Each structure stands twice: as structure tokens, then as C-alpha cells.
Image 1 (cartoon, rainbow, N blue to C red):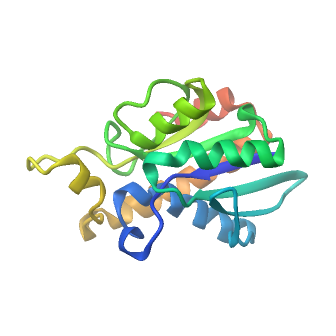
Image 2 (tube, one colour):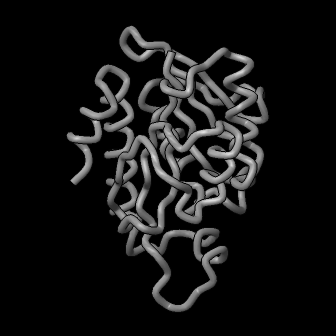
Image 3 (tube, rainbow, N blue to C red):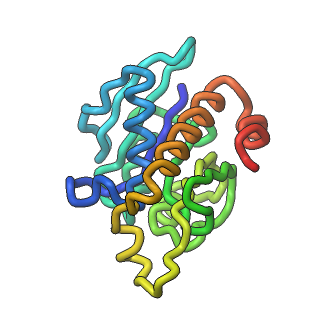
Length: 186
């Protein structure tokens, strides 16, 4: 069983913000794989299906970003899921908008959702797809920036980045994550 967790914040006011790009990837995968992510369980919206011969769960924590680790921990316990089978998808200011970066370990880099996951998992080693949102260049407060929508000028790049992240997640279902990193980084 594989599980893909997209980080974001619940509620329509956050739907199109930079911080919710993880939810957008889960939604795109749900559409691609015809999985309904509507079941409320483990402090998340979840859905499962088959992709080829692989059972896959899609997870959108409903805890708000800063408590994402609580939802992941609950999912792991309830479904006896393994951390090595997860891919966490989230926004990353240290990656240029439109680019993705795959990693299998590392610190939170100032991301409170990742900080929560590291705290609740007790490790920095888990597969991740970092979605580029760049840093604010106009002196905007970081929290305001990540909770703002992408401007129209970036929408095409964001759509392409979302598709690339979906392709990477799909590739990782049947290939080692190291191989997926080699194919999709750079």
C-alpha cells in the first residue's frame, strides 16, 4: 500500500493559495486515478483506489498546516501504514515557482507542516515532493505570502508543475524513490 499526503489548509478561503498546492496535487491525482477523496477519517479527507496493481490512499489532512503530523500519525495507526510508503507533497519557498524537487530526508526548512510531521514521526526521513512557490520579493510577510493566491501570471507554470508532481508520484508507485528523484529532479 502506498499513500500520498498533500498538505494544505481546509476551507474555501485557502483553496487557491500557495500553501494549498499539496491539496491541489492530491485533487489532480484523484481525478487522474478516479479516486474519491471524500471519506472523513483520521482528521483528514481520504480516498483509496488501485493504480495498476498498487493500492493507493490519497490523504488531505484537515488539521490545518501546523498540525499535519497529527493526521498522518492517526492514518498510520489506523491503517497500519508504513512511513517508507508515504509521499508528502507541499509548498516550498526555496524552490522556484513552477519547479518541483524530490527529497527523501531533510529538515523542515521553516515549513510548519513539515515540522509537525517530523515531530510526530520522530524522523526527518520520508519521501517528499516539494512544490516551488518562490520567496516573496516585495518584503511581504511570509505568512501572508503563502496564504495568498498565485497571480495569473504564474497559473500556467503552476498547472505544469502540478502535472509534473503527479507524474512523479505515479512513477514512484512502481519505482524506487531514488530512481524517481533521478528522473524528476533537475
